[in-house]
Amino acid sequence: MQRCLAIAALTWKAAFRFRLFWVLTSLLLGSVVLLPLLLKDDGTARGFTQILLTYTLSTITALLGLATLWLACGILARDIEECQLQIVAVKPIPRWQIWLGKWLGLVVLDLTLLAVAGSSVYALLHWRSSRLPERERAILRNEIMVARASMKPPTPDLEPYVQRAFEERVRENAVPPAEQEELKKQLREMFKLGVQAIGPGVAKNWTLDLGFRKAVLRDEPLFVRLKFYVAQTNASGTYVCTWQIGPPGQIRTMTMPMAAESYHEFAIPPNLFDDQGRLFVRLINRENTTLVVPLEDGFEVLYREGGFGLNFIRGLLIIACWLALLAAIGLASATFLSFPVAAFFSASLLFVILSSGTLSNVVTEGTVFGLDHESGKAAAGWLDLVLLPIFKGMLSIINLVKGFSPVDALSTGRSITWFQVFRAIGQIVLFLGGIAAAAGMIILTRRELATAQPQV
Image (cartoon, rainbow, N blue to C red; front, side, top):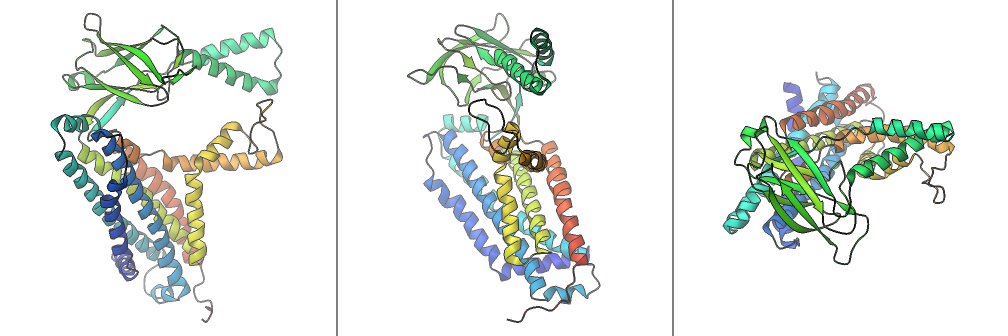
């Protein structure tokens, strides 16, 4: 371990020699101080704080991510190209420890810079919130600067209904085997739409079981979060909804206009659940068009689970996991590529990760050529047989990284649990980072360093 720490110290010296540490510190602090002056919000403290958290943390992550890739590629590729690694390799230290020491140095450097930038964002948030009126501070404490968990109603099992309808359709009409999966998909979407739709004048009921949370949430405010779509838009763009919340005899009624295709969040009085810990929520559609509330993220109830400070630290730890993976990718590519090529290769991998939405659409449609506009079916080709399995594998690996979203969670006051942090460490650092580390260590160990270098 002492040898690895010595290599890590040399990595720090390289960062200071490149003046990267001070440049990055200046850029990070500048993004925290100057960026809020350029942001436009909706005029509320909640809107400004959400935008501030989103943009500052996203900027910090982008700056540190690009700098990590650049430095990881540079400190190893240049050492190999300039024959400096040959001097270190003849010392009594295995090459895999050299690789590991450089990775540790980069990770500690990232943690230091992330701590400086994160502390600045945290201090700025508290300083600005202390200057607000008490009403606005209460909103921030309850909705943004808090760790809130989510309760959702159980998702109905539609497969028995889909299977029964499919069997009836097959008995009535002969369906070719090649079209049976598409028929099941259409039936599944039809039943799903029936569950999600709320017709004009129709009520939709949800029942949430608080369970053991009943004692903890007594006298605590709860928040309803809703997003819906409409079958037909109107001129105003808003739709009147009536909410009835609570058990019989204690029902609270609220009527409010809501816009479609955007999230709405409002507080409900505490203690509106019954003695068994069940919370009853009813939504009545007062419009002449159908409202569609998605099963996945259309309706949920949020409640306070913890404080903002510890939640903020957990979010930064997940960002640190991303940076640790980027450091491993940069170092692994530098073991067999020159500095410019390694930087390009690593940036290309990062671009593929960021463009995962395109890969997801290709996998969902089942073709790389897009759907036929007339038939709505995929145009089958030999490239689909080759590329689709590759895209599916790439997407499954990318989802291991992108399944964590600390920036979105912090900007909406969502709780980031320790389980999510440990899962991020396991999936991002140990699994994906371990694969990159193993490849980098093996290649560096087997690479011939004593080859003749070109004279400049």
